[in-house]
Image 1 (cartoon, helix red, strand yellow):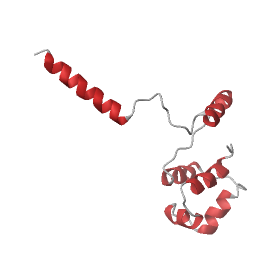
Image 2 (spheres, rainbow, N blue to C red):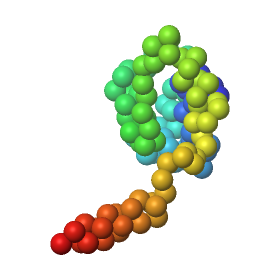
Image 3 (cartoon, rainbow, N blue to C red):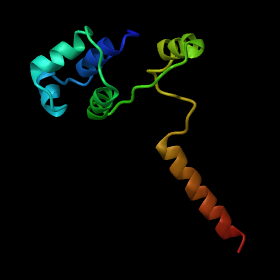
Length: 107
């Protein structure tokens, strides 16, 4: 996993199957502007980062360095895997059914 912001944008575009040209239109930038931006050779405003994140349905965050190792380990280990311990939508639905039927028994 890349830790630099701009390679992460490129990875996200690739994962979502969005071409640079399509994303430049979506972000309201010309293709040369986007290409220059992703070359990571200059400062970028927070507003530009917000616009990019919004268009990618993502967030950019400031991560304190004392937490970076733990976050990196989490993402590498299980951040991309499903949480099998979490109840599924069907399980949650069945729970609501059982709660509503058991509350009806009290009457």
